[in-house]
Amino acid sequence: MTVSFTRWPDDLAARYREKGYWTDLPLTDILTRHADSDACALIDGDRTFSYRALNAASDRLGAALQRQGLKRGETALVQLGNVAEFYITLFALLKIGVAPVNALFSHQRTELEAYAGQIAPALLVADREHSFFGSDETLNQFVAAHASLRVVALHNDSGEHALSTLIASEQGEFVATPTPADEVAFFQLSGGSTGTPKLIPRTHNDYYYSIRRSNEICQFTAETRYLCALPAAHNYPLSSPGAFGVFLAAGCVVLARDPSATLCFPLIEQHQINVTALVPPAVSLWLQAIQEWGSNAQLASLRLLQVGGARLSSSLAARIPAEIGCQLQQVFGMAEGLVNYTRLDDSEARILNTQGTPMSPDDEVWVADEHGNPLPRGEVGRLMTRGPYTFRGYYNSPEHNARAFDANGFYSSGDLIAIDEDGYITVQGREKDQINRGGEKIAAEEIENLLLRHEAVIHAALVSMEDDLLGEKSCAWLVTKRPVRPVEIRRWLRELGVADFKLPDRVECVESLPLTPVGKVDKKQLRQWLAARTQA
Ligand code: AMP
Ligand code: DBH
Image 1: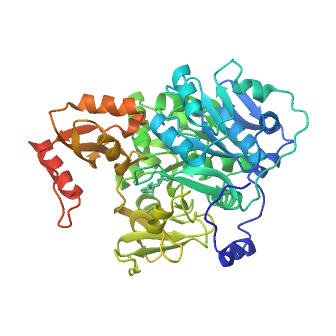
Image 2 (image 1 turned 90 degrees about the horizontal axis):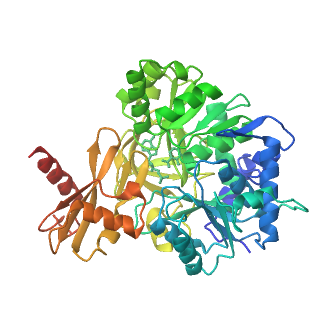
Image 3 (image 1 turned 180 degrees about the vertical axis):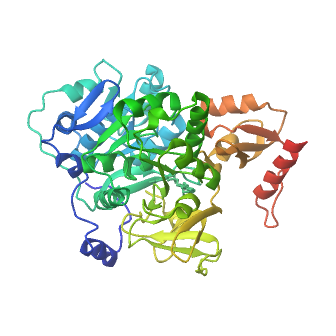
């Protein structure tokens, strides 16, 4: 049994193998290659795991899950925060060939249902301290509603389903059964632009290559001490080079529950962190903290700060070397694949003003006009890409894939970019209907569909509004049968179970929504209305 997905055409697959990108090793090799090492792999609070211990823990969990009947080719829904168990579980599942969707901790019922509905998981790994899975009632309802679920393992639980019991169990015989390297290893989450959250199948071959190549560019080594302060399951802190890159290089990952300065600065000092990854709003908060506390001394060990996930302004960028006292690297990536980095030896101008260049020589990136034709160098248009670690289709979404890919298999990310004479990319805007709330992506259509389910809402449009800290926030424009208050709308969406970051920051009611000549909601006009209302 294997998970179905859209493969690369044979000629490209052959080329990626020939060039040594695809090595046909399972992702578990990232850990098992260090199985005999007592070097520190992971620090989570007062718990420290050597490579030997991390590998053994994931073997024990893998063996326990196999005893419970889980088999290669099945799938799992996992929701864990920034805890050691996240990596233990991920490696255990990779070892037994069960492909997980790693939901973000901020996800609630709506997202979790959507993922489970798509993959029909045999296993659920959840946290009793999460607001949804913390209640017996909602947990039992969820399990009852998904007939495919046969095994439940709970973090922060001491009952019969305790994850800790499985991790601590006697290993007995364990034979790893990872999926073949050119099959699906796990699913990444798309920030999306459609009504339903989309899943991105990632193979061992493509993901392993993206990690190996990221390590070369970012120069991760056994000396690397990486602070993971963004959500561990996200593609960026997992693979660019992220925790997987650190493990591959035999360095050390230190977990932080969130990217706040109060939490991270002491961790950086205590563990002599030399590299971390942030989104732009977190950078602003760090700079503010340094100003308020009058010192950056706690950050003395930091050599490299990666910033990505959303557009970093040149002015904020310039403050990083000056005020944090470390080097900046811009990272423009996507869970779908393509990752661009500024290089460590790039000129200051490039590091401050561009989003870098693709990491692989075989990333094919070009800029299309609205009809899908190539534009000359330097002109702004739609990013089109394919390559050795860029996916070829969302899971089970033929209709959406037909729109997201061109006839030659190039993925259209919805970003508007320009590529300069030397191949450096700048992100200029966005065509996809998505709001980038400080790196957290909101698909406008997903929230609009939910708003339309409210009994008083007749029409709904979600648009971005500028925000000093987050870059963008969301504003819901509504046509309603009766006056509604913003709190009512937000409370109602929360009750439907959507992640907090997707709740509209502002709600505006109008008589009717403006339309474009073809009759679509005119979101440009709505942004102008918002500007006018804000000024008034
Ligand atoms: P996701 O679909 O959640 O993986 O988010 C990927 C999207 O985040 C990209 O398509 C961009 O729109 C945005 N993004 C990521 N990194 C950057 C960056 N450095 N600058 C601007 N936008 C970015
Ligand atoms: O925003 C992203 O999805 C992202 C940003 C930087 C990403 O997936 C990545 C690097 O790998």
